[in-house]
Image (tube, rainbow, N blue to C red; front, side):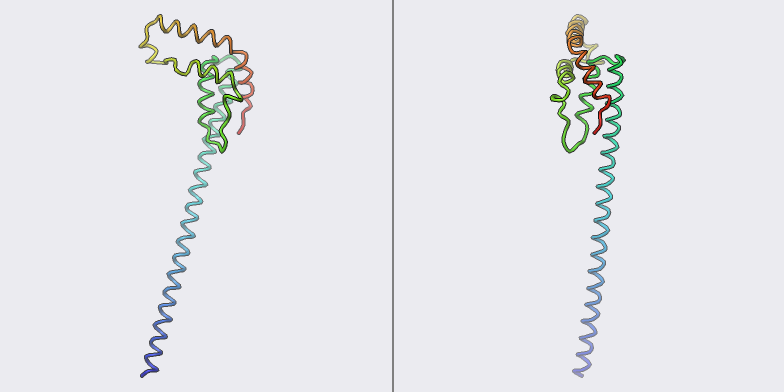
Length: 157
């Protein structure tokens, strides 16, 4: 009788050990799968960031080339290029003010000027005064901005 109880106990312990081993293996497989899924998501995220940055770089080059060819006025270029440079998702941000001081200066002058419908809401005299100020600053900074645009036409990350 004791022998039968001992045998039954051993069989039960072995069955429980086997079941515990199966559960541990299943847990290990789930953790491995979760890690693979997480790595795949991170890889997709990084690829999306890279694709987005590549599109932004392409836009920067396009606008910069248009600016050097005087197809885009310098205040418009300053706004567009500065915003695009700011939106790049890089480990280390581009030092826009240090690298492109003329673009930065122009951007700072025109960034708060009204556009589109907001511009239409202002009196004509006020708009003309803003335009004259903008145009004078454009003339002052145009050569420098074209030089900086030539650099941005070859921009890479």
